[in-house]
Image (cartoon, rainbow, N blue to C red; front, top):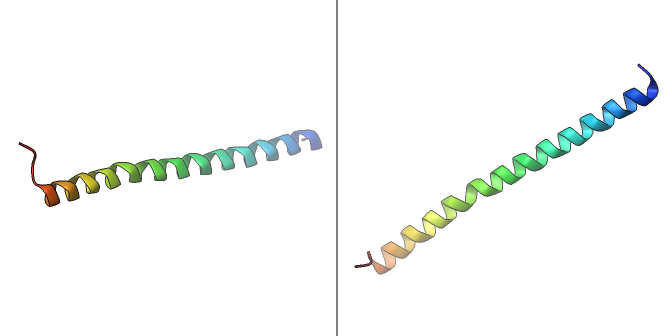
Length: 52
């Protein structure tokens, strides 16, 4: 393989790894939002009772 091709392949691999890491981080952050929201709703219901 030419040195330019090796360099491009390495650059693409590094970029793919960075994007994969970013996507994984975003998925982790997004997964916590519903849990936090549901916990707040349940806490509110426990403190105030069910609306009528």
